[in-house]
Image (cartoon, rainbow, N blue to C red):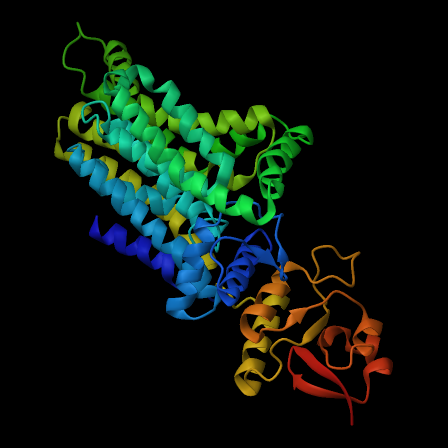
Length: 488
């Protein structure tokens, strides 16, 4: 288990700050947090120094990025560090939960299955300046609280608090925690008293309510319209996805492959270890299946409800069901534990088979993740990586001399190639974070009419603009040229 946790730690933190901040959506969030830090503001997020209604989520995750900037300095590493840390904390919390339940094999195998869930380490989650890592940490705490609530009723308080904090990360997405809680009521109905219900509701509402009041005093209902009406209603009204997309993504995930392999092992071992002819293997399998489903009802709900919800609403993004992946890691761990302790009665061959199957399958997914996504992060020569490196080097040479000046951009790489005069988020983040310039949309003509401005131009486009720009002072010459409006 220690080895597996060490492996996860490497996958989370190695080369964490090397690759550029990508447009979906960490470049936005890193810029939000930088501007909030600069303005001494922990409540209201801005983007390019205008109030940001595109990122309409509550600010809790941005606040952790601000704190990370204060500790490590402004950088991609600092922007991503909270997500990586929350990933490690999530893993440790689940391991502790399994130990409390005396699921020792689950505790050992969970970090291996967690590491094998490559999507959690490659996009929009634990190695990204995103909101999903902290949201899923509170999701996990809420689900563990529900499970514990069956016998330890006061865990209802932690459930309520986790629900409120999850809302402070991703707003309406926290409703999934509430829906799962409703479906789990038959298992925890004895926990409900008037006092517990009221206090839990207060714990869920108090922090969001304070934030809403504070935000309302600033811009009224404008943000809430964007958060609840613009994002939720807008996505539903514009939904045109296939209802099968979330299921396809979910069932093709690496952890589902591991879970399916464990099921096959369970069936084979059950048949092999059938004690007598009178007790058929079919009966044993059926009985074991029912017992497993009953004992893991919550984790099954947790895995399926997000997938079903985003299938019905047809508003799916990959990272919306990362919480289902975590649930499947827990289900897989519980299944492996069940195979070893019940189907094999803790016999050595059962441990060896489960261990060998788990390690072999996990390494199939872990190896390429480490090889290509972790070890090679930021060294692929991407134009935005080149831009970021040039910005950093230029800043080290000129200090804050150009802090606060207008900056224009002529880029080679653009997400929307049809738009020439727009700073895309992947360029905005490093320009603001490392050089503290003001990205201004515009063309060469706008730059030439802005005497104190500077221009970034990808050298691959120099010949296109050389007739106009020849004679202007070149402040920096590398993958990008940085030019002023001075003439020599």
